[in-house]
Every structure is written in structure tokens, then in C-alpha cells.
Amino acid sequence: MTLRFEQILADGVAECSYLVGDDSAHTCAVVDPRPDVEIYLEAARRFGLAITHVFETHIHADFLSGARELVDRLGGQAKLYVSTEAGAEYGFEHEPVHDGDEFTFGGMRMKARFTPGHTPEHVSYLLFDGDTETPWGVLSGDAFFVDSVGRPDLLGDDQSEELAEKLFHTVRDVFMALPDDVIIYPCHGAGSACGPDIGDRMSSTIGYERRFNSYARIEDLKEFKEAILGDAPPVPTHYPRMKKVNSEGPEVLRNLPRIEPMTVERFAEAAEGGAQVLDVRDMMDFGAGHVPGSLNIGARPELSVWAGWLLDPGKPIYLVLHEDTELLGVLRLLWRTGFTDFGGYLAGGMAAWREAGREFAQIPQISVHELHKAEDLHPLDVRKPDEWEGGHVPGARHAFLGELREEMDDLDRSAPYATYCASGFRASIAASLLKKNGFEQVRNVPGSWKAWSAAGYDVEKPS
Image (tube, rainbow, N blue to C red):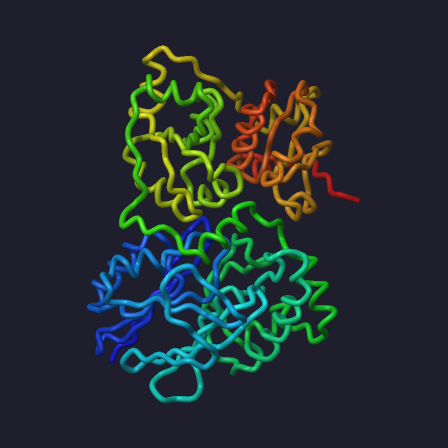
């Protein structure tokens, strides 16, 4: 027997899924799959395995579950297993999982443990060799992370206190009761908002977390509640929507979402009619010229999250690409946060738009040196609150990007703003959002805070 264990990272949403199995039995399971499921089918083929089980640790809020998609692609060979603890209900066919249920794949065994707190129904999976009683690993889902634990506040204030108490007991009575050498494999890595300050490493051990995880070290319930509820990052706007979609059952597409190429004339007609236009090019290209009214979110893994924050799921998306060949990768990123309705993409991109003599809008790009010298510009910091508190451009105003739309009415639409973030990526999103909403004097700062710091300019911190 050779244990086959694959940790598969979905960049952007920072989600970790797992393929676990035994090549002597030629069977395996997939845990917490993302919607673009071909990666699991390819891994199973590479190892000569048949996927017979698909598991979910809980009802996900941050990304679109691919469990139903994967089961459908397997043609009835695999079944979908979800926790029905705490009365959890689903709108799709499933096999119930309860605390203590065991599943065997050749010489490897998985055992479900009820680990509520992040969600009421959450389960984790202990990993064993054969009949041994001591696990070597645990798939901890969103209950326990590297340097952190799952946030208990995603179901609203009325349930946060109760879930925080359950999470406290999950951490103390389940995870801290495991031997030090048990390896922790979480559902998320750094960058996810499913827990505060998740560490950069992709796995850890119980012993390490016992010593260094600040939440795992808290032994008083009141102190734990204050820490975990006080440290929780802002809740992305797509989380409640994803939670609902995943509990009811995402639509099975059997392929990537459909989208058609559009001529300049048809694309212009849609854009002028108020269509939701998403331009995924680099900030410099976008600034030089874009379809008026476009939102700029570059085709990087973070596209998934910021699309979730800022796009309207009730309207079709019209895409502008750097190259048409990037389309499939962009569709995968958008699918991960539930976007499947596309009006079309501009065939030939902005080159076709310009050559057709169409009007284009621009956003000036300025260096940190220009920002430093400017006396009439208002620096607008769109980073997360903890980034702002760590230091910012003197005289800047803070407006976190995820909440910028709600704060626009507090800004002066006639004032000249220069948006900045850590590198310029989020700043360009913010600049395009402001421009789209009637702010005419908007500039973006490529390099942003990193460039400002590298230039050695003064830093201001909140008192």
C-alpha cells in the first residue's frame, strides 16, 4: 500500500481541498472540492485511483462548493457525504455523516468528529493507518487553522455568542486533546477571511499550535469569546449568498460557465445599456484606456474574492480581457465565488474597441513620488483596517475597499483622490469603482504602500 495524499490549493480564495486514498485498493476520497473539478479527476488518474466518496466538512460561505459537480462528473460512482449534525438540511441528494462515522480506503481510515463553532454542523476528519487508534492527521476544515481558528460570526449576531462557545469547546476538547504529533490540514490558508490572521504555512501540528496559536492557548471562555469575536475581519458580501447556494445545492454545469464572443457593436450596445462590465487587465493597461463604466479587477487569483465582494450576482457579466486566450482561466476564478451568468466577452479586446473608433475612458496612474509632491491630492487608503493601523500615508483617509461603495456618499465627488493599497491591485479596483460612480478626478498609485515605504517617505500611524 502507498497512501496517496494530495493537498490542492485554490489560490485567491485560499481554499485547500484534499484527495486521500490507497493505491493498493485503487480507491480514494475528495474532501471540500472547488467547482472546477478537473484537477481532482486528473489527480485520481495519475495515481490510478477511483473517487468513490466526496466529503464536505461544512456548508461553505466563502467559495462555491464543487461537491455536486464532482459527483455528477463521476457518473454515479461516488456519493456525496455531508454532516447532518445540529439538524443541518440540504436541498440535494446526500449521504448523512454523524460524529464517529468511519470510512475505509484500503489501509487508510477516516473518522468524523463533530467540531461545531465555525458553523453549527461542522465536522472534521481524523486520519488513521489501518486499525491503529491514534490518528496521524486531521482534516480540520474551517474549525482550526494554522495560527488561528474559524470565525463564529458568519451566521449573524444572534448566533455568534453561542457558536463562539461551541468553538471554544471544539478547540479545547477536540483539537487540544489530540497528541502533539498529529498533523493539521486546514481548509484555508493565509488570505482567507474565514478566520483571523491565518498563518502562511499550509499545515501544522497539534504540538506547534498548542505552543504558538494564541486562540488555542486561551483557557477561559470569556477571554476566548472576546478575542475571536474582536479579531474577526470584515465579512465579504458574498458569504451569505454562498452559504445559501451551497446548502440548497449549486447548479451542476458539467463544464465551465458558458460565454460567447461579442463584436464591438454588440458589446457597446450592452455597455451603453448599463451592463455590468468587468475589465480583468492590468492596472496600467486599464488606466490607459477602458470601456466607460468598467470595473477593473485584474486576472490574478484575488479576482475570485473581489468579484465576490463587488459584483452583482443578479446581473450578467461582460468581460474585457488582455488576450482572448485568458478566458478559461478567468471563468474558473469567477466560478469559484459563484458567478456563472455571463453576457459575453469583447472579442479582440480593447484593441478592437479602439480600432472601431469607440470612446474610451482613462484613469491617470501616478508614482508615489508624484503623490509625495502633490499638495492638491487626497490620498485614499483602501487597505484592510489592520493594514491601515500598521502605518499609512500622512494625511490619508481610510476607506476599506470591500466597504467603499457604502462610504462613497461621505466622500467629496469634486475632490481629487489618489487611491492606494499595498501594491496597486486593490487601488485600481477602487479607482475604477469611484470613476464608475461619478468621481472624475481619480488617480491610481501603482506600487502603492510598498513603493511608498521603499522610497523612505514619512509614515503616519493612528494615535
